[in-house]
Image (cartoon, rainbow, N blue to C red; front, side, top):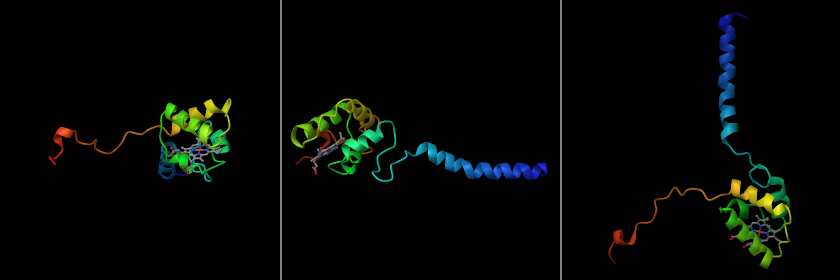
Length: 118
Ligand code: HEC
């Protein structure tokens, strides 16, 4: 192969792979079935937390570790969720890492003194 041609081929290969690589790095991989983020602890969450309801309830929610713990305790007290034993820490690690509160994109509400008079 001529040098020019080799350079051209390697450029072509690069331009094909870069967008794919970039997408792979930026996107969080989701489980096809549950749509849960695939990350450490995900299989435990999928096994323990999609028995009674779909994973949508988890995916739609955001909370810090304590918030997730409160939801688990609430389900244990009133919805028949079993004691999670050593899995509890794994599940909380996963939820805290992947479903933490995100900064809101919305403008915060006006303070009272800037609200129109009623
Ligand atoms: C024994 C059954 C059961 C299991 C297992 C279970 N849940 Fe639930 N969960 C419920 C019920 C019942 C509700 C209320 C559903 C509704 O309101 O429609 C609920 C609601 C929720 C909600 C919504 C709470 C809210 O305030 O809106 C979240 C989040 C949730 N579960 C997460 C989890 C996680 C995480 C696990 C795994 C540790 C889990 N669930 C396992 C029964 C269960």
